[in-house]
Each structure stands twice: as C-alpha cells, then as structure tokens.
Amino acid sequence: MEVALNLKLHKVQQEIHESSSRFKAIDAGKRFGKTEWSLFELIQKAHEKVGEYWYIGPTYKQAKATVWRKLLEMIPKVLIKGKPRETALELPLVCGSSIFLKGSDDEDTLRGPEIDGVVFDERSYQSESIWPRIIRGQISKRRGFAYFISSPNWKGKNHWTKFCNDVKRRMVGGDVRYYFRHCTIYDNTMLPIEEIEEIRGSVPTYIWDLEYMAKESEIAGQLYSEFNFDRDIMEMKVEKGMRRFRFLDHGLEHPMACLWSVIDEERMWIYVYDEYVRAGCTISQNCSMVKEKTGEDVVEWSVMDPSTARRDPITKKSYMFEYSLNGVPCIAGERTQRGVDLLKMCIERGRIKVHPKCKTLIYQLQNVEYGDKEGDDAVDALKYGVAMICDMIPEFRLLSKGVIGERVVGLKKGTHEVSLFDDRLFNDGMQGQSGLNWLMEEVA
Image (cartoon, rainbow, N blue to C red; front, side):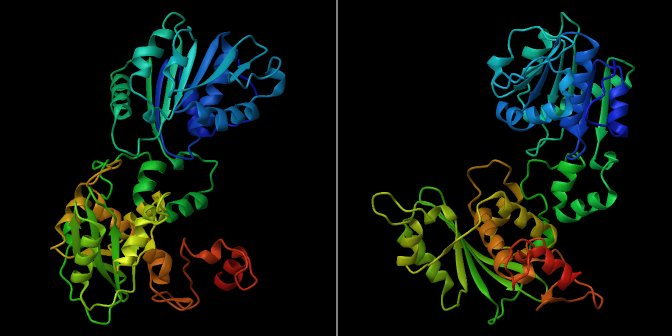
C-alpha cells in the first residue's frame, strides 16, 4: 500500500524505491536526501506488512536529536497510533507496525528481537560487525529487507567501500536480491542547479568530491593530499623588506616546532624558509634556539597552539606566558577544523611554498593522516600560521585574486570578488550596515 506522506521523492529516490531487491546499497553524497529516503522506505514497508522496522544511525544521540523530528514531520498524524514514545524512540502505527530509531554506538540495544526490515543510515560511520554479527540474523526468520545508504567515510576507504563493491558485483552478476547505486548532489533534482554550483564554489575540492559527489580519493586518509612536491618545494630569495612571521606548536616531551615564513604579496604565496623541531627541551631552551635562528630579523607576529593560553590552576600562569617571559611572545592560533580547511585550500591553490631544507615539514605534509595524534607538530604550526594570515591579511581571504583596498586586481572594471571569510558578510554594524546590505549595496 502506498501511503501519502509529507515528502515527495525526487526522480532518483523514486527509482531506488521502485527496485524490489531485498538488499540495497546506496553510495550517496550530501544533500541527496539520504535520511529522508531512509524514513520513507521504513514507513512504506511498515504499511505493506505488519511488523517491527528499524532505522539505525551512527549514534543514538543523532537519531534522537534530528531523525526523530524528521520522522514525526514526515508521517501524517492520522497514521500514528496513540502518542509517539520518544523515550524509546518508538513510533506505533495504526496499521499495527512500529518504527524504532536506533544508534549503532550501543550494540546491546540492537540485540535480540526479530525484525522485518532495517535501514542503515551513514553506514560508513558505523562498526562493520553490526550487520553480519547482529542484524543479519535478526531479519532472517521473517525474511526482512536491509537497505544501506551512506556517504564515504572522510577518513578513507573502509568496510563500506568493500560492501558496496560486493553488492555491485552481485547485481552485475544477475543476483536480483541485490541493488547498488551511486548518487551525487546533482541527482537531487529538487535543488536548483545555481544552488549546487554555489556550494561547489564555496568549499575545497576535497570536501566537494567526498561529501557531495560521494567520490573516494585514491589517497584517502592522507590529510594534506593537495600537497605537490614538485610544485610546492622551492628555493626563493627572502628579501629584507618582506613581512616575516613565526608559527609555533608547543611541546616538551613531544617535539616543539617553529616555522619561519614570509609572504609574497605579489604572487599570494606563504613561503616557509626555515624550521626548528626538537623534543625534550625546556621552554627556555627552545626559546633560546628560536631567538638565535631569528637573529636580527624583525618578526611581525608569532602564533602558537591556542591550548597554551590556558592558565595552570595552581601557578595561574600559562605556557604562552612562559614563552613571552623568554622573549618569544605569541598570539593564540586556530585549532579547529576550519584551520585544516584553510590550510588545505591554500595548498590546493599553490599558495604554500616550502624551502627544501624544511625536511620535517615536508615529510609531515606528505605523510600525516586523518586522526594522527603524533608526528604532526610542524604541520600543526603551519595550520596555525596560515589560518592567522587568512584572518589578519585581507589578500589571503580571497579564493583567487589579489585585492587593493576594496577593489580586486585582475578583474574587469565593475566586477568584484568577495571572500567567504570576509567579516562584512556576517557582522552587523559595519558602518551602520548589515552584512547583507553591504553585499548588495557595495559589491553587487
């Protein structure tokens, strides 16, 4: 029985829905409508056959905070029996079926009952063993269905990759029980193409490929895969008048790293021309080496791991204060994912150049992977510095062209280009104008 829900499937979702295969694997990018499709299938199946149906997301918290609300918005109230049981995340239906929302982070809640069907949402972010070890047996007696939908895991290829390949192989081999489809944001025909292209232009390529195109990289797992040795390693003359900066990552037992850099404002380059990386030294010893290597050069500012700004509860002093006492004053840098994204974007655009003698930094740019907690000291220092330059120097906020004053260099007269990180887009009170008014009146 087809149930009229508060959701209309787009063309590709409808094609997937119409497949009668018992096992479906959908490798889909963001904004395809993964969760909506998952809930639609569960509601429809629950009205075709009375039984117990499960949605399994990565975490219980996520299922309760977002998916539960979507489920209640999607299904008409006349189809709900009594009151939804939010504590158990159970939705009883008038037809006699029940839909449960589960999280894969608590395996004990998944064991036991026989179920008539299940949809795994964002399967690549769940434990591999949940399906073969727990759920597969619980759908066997009632010949239940199992649908899997996910974007690729941002850490790299994992069990989801192998699972999709297996389902695809079985489908191509003629096994009608299996169905595979790869979907992207472009398959969502309800999104205006202008909106899609705007998203594409506003995110780094690696995010676009992975998150929106569901495209796994052959070098997935490598954090700074945009780094190109032949393009980014070079010897450049450091002129006396260039603006100089130091990027630091604090360490005592772990290595302390310091990078010396200048910016070439004509070519929009950040050039790292020297490094110091050493473990087992005190703050005063490290500061002595930093000052010695800096010499008489005038450094505009030094940026450091923001965690060093935290005060010790007993001494009331911070590591950053100790660096300042020892002649290396620093400002706190950017530790969030935004810092990584800014560095990756600058590397991708060829804006980071490194002297060949900076061997530790070069090695780490080539080898650091997502989730590494050690061996990333030099690239962390670079991350803090690049994020600070992007925030403090207007030219480096732009995605492409240089800027003089309020005008972009190299574009046709009357054309403007706005940085995604331009504060005027987001802050009110800029010369009495809101961000939107400034964009429309000064730029458009």
